[in-house]
Length: 507
Ligand SMILES: [Fe+2]
Image (cartoon, rainbow, N blue to C red):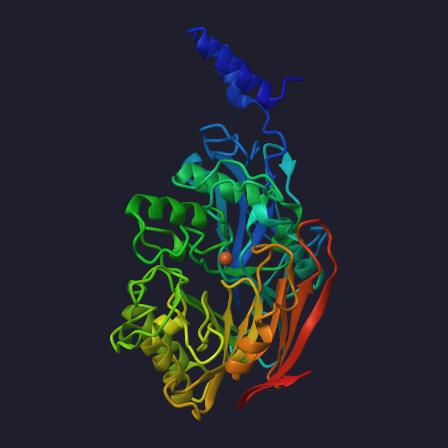
């Protein structure tokens, strides 16, 4: 039997010879079977009390250089089923969507009218082939006090830096929700000595970003994490370009945004319009938690103190300027309203970059990163004041820095005696920065001069939480290595946070 690759090769040689294939041959090629079209797996996301998004993207050849996954340039019907049981005996919803070439054959099924606080299973069928089965959940009913939320989160999955074992270990915990806090892909070109080879070089256009996303989704550990629970995703810089801050050409940004939407289980409200995509939004979990997902990349002011992102330098007046914003006015106003109206026990702020103050220079000299909220002090003060004014139990969930951290955010950065108003939990990366160490030579000094920082671990992994109305239990999960597959995960730090007191109590 002819494989699709062989058919394509045949077509290419005909073209080279300047011969047009007869109509019957072309028709046969169009009807050629799509072998194993579900190589990118399945996913769900954006859980609400009555629904969620189901996602898949068809690709028979995920590493095809044009980013189109080896799919023919025609629409393909995709059937889907949602059931109450894993064996699909009690199917509660089903339908057919069209996977279109202009959307890289991705499918987003947005469901409503389902039972709150329920577990469901879903699968797709296309070209006579069945996808794997995914598990997903609806959020509890508004105000419902019944269920705790098992939330895990991580960030920064550089394919070339190692194996995605952290995703596998997350899946094994069977969480209710996975929050991904940015750098789902890295746009970088090829490394000299990668742990794993990537396809395609640096992402510069739509084909490049589509291909990078497709290669990630071929990873069995990542597919397992998508198939086990709904996700809530935000991006960081590398989903577009290293340290970007409104300075990426519109065409490249639009390409990155479009590929991001195509490859993530997002709602129609997050569909990009050119070089704009509204990623900030809320996910509610009964009376237990409101998750506010923020976008600190798209609307931020340019970097302060004449630096590029990530620069650690001496202080400058600019980073303290009262008009500076990391969220932009619209998003800030939205977040203010979310915090004002919140009635949940916990308000979780899922976002990208270090929010707590952090002096990165040892000794009496000081140095601030201008990429995090230290470069946008007025924004941090505003959020801290809003959290304080509405007496919210705020926990900030952060990624970006490729190491685990836990600490406290103060009401006023200028006053060392100022009361903490929120806890920040910073997750390490899936792979970025390689195997790592538990501690670096300068870690004790850094912790000593930042007394509001309570925990550090420099290995790869994720953060696992169990959030109830009584307490929030936090486990920092660390992997021994990522340069080889299948590392075990261990808990390198464990804390309990109680409502009414933004402190990290040892568990
Ligand atoms: Fe990163």
